[in-house]
Every structure is written in structure tokens, then in C-alpha cells.
Length: 88
Length: 189
Image (cartoon, rainbow over all chains, first blue to last red; front, side, top):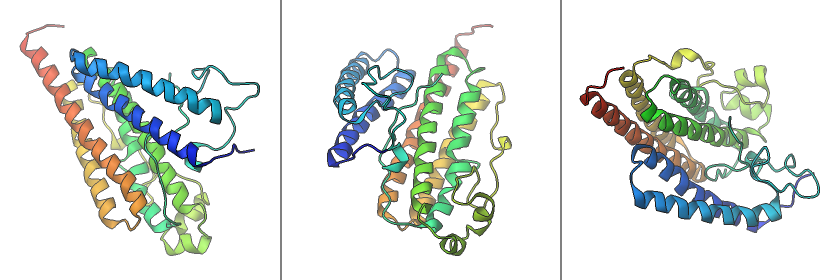
């Protein structure tokens, strides 16, 4: 049984995708510029921001991360419920 | 280990069923310069690359897995509602005969993926130059796909992926410079 997907799902997901893109980009940059303090500061800032967005998203649409990294599965096992990313 | 995250790296929207476009996109799925080759190449090279650039190969290799998932999503969405006749008209009759609507690691011409597409030379500079070449070839492939595609939503995702190849190439160039700097310090191992 698939979860209910509304417009807010797509909007929230896009906010997360945007925040996490900053983190991917900064990760690769920091891999070759590990001493750049302002990049590190920006990384920490977006890491906090992404965590906040995901907390709100997961309360409504279920866990984003596998193997207990999203650490509150709720009263029932939600992980395996559709939709998967290629289905939305 | 890896932890799966239940989201795409960047949205993949599909305007309509379009198996002909899906066939072209397979070049980036199971082709020589595609995302599977990229991910497996970098993740395999990281064991013997110097410590200073292991993180970069690890992280770019991981991002390539996310790109592989985006390409898979495009192919899946473009073909899932296609009839056998539509698949045949799009040049996917051979694919259908063997795989139905399933995805398979093959290139646009239906040639299965092979490990001979990738190299691990054990020489850090040789490996990184291969990686730079791989990114530039993938960037060019994305350009040809954008040129031949007639789906504006798919093109938006393809432009994102084209841009990522440019960034990866830049980072690999920086990795080469980091290793060259170390070589200048006459460190002996």
C-alpha cells in the first residue's frame, strides 16, 4: 500500500534535494580543499539545515535513510512502503 | 558500507512515454562512458590511490551511483507504459525479446556492459588521467543526448548531470596537482 503523495511531498523533497546538493558539492570541494574554513562553516550550516528539513519530511512521509540512520521508524514498519524514488 | 537514501539526487520528470529516447539514454546506463562504469571505476581505484585522494574517489564514486539511479529512473519512466509495438518501433524489439520492460546494463546499441570499459592501473597519475577522460567523455555524451532529446523535462535532468561531469573533472584535475605537489617534496615510500 503506497503512502499518500501530495504537492507538499514534492515541494519538501525538492527543498531537501537542494540542501543536500550543497552538501554534495561542498564535500567534493573540501576533499581537495580541506583547509578552507569558510567552506567548512558553510558545510556545517547546511548539514544542520538538511537535518531539520528531513525531520519534518520524515514525520509526514516516513524514513528517508536505511538501516536505522533515520532512527524513528514509528509504530509500524514504514521503510518498505512505496513510493520509491523512481515511482514519483 | 553504504546507506541508501530514499530520494533521487535531483528530480527526474518525464513528459510522456518515449521509448526511443530511453534507448539513447541507455548509453549512460550501461555504456563505456556511462554512470555504471564511472561508479565502478572510481570505487575500485580507491583501494590503491594515495591517501590524500581516496576521499575524493570514494565520494565521486558514490555520487555516480546516485546518477545511475537517475538514468535508471528516466529509462523506467519513459518505457513503463510502452506497448510491445511501441518498443519495437523505437528499436527496442531485441531488448524486449530478452528483458520485457526490465532494465539491463547495456549501451544504446544493446551491447552489454563489460569490465573492459574501465581500468585500474595502480599508477595514481595514470588512474586519475583516465578518470578525467571518463568525465569529459561522459560530459560529451550528455551533450549529444540533450541535442537529440525532444523531452524538455528530461533535458533539465540531463543538464544537471552534464554539469556534474564538469565539476568532477575539475576535482580530478585538482587531485592530480595534489599528488604532483607531494612528488615535488621527494617523499620516498
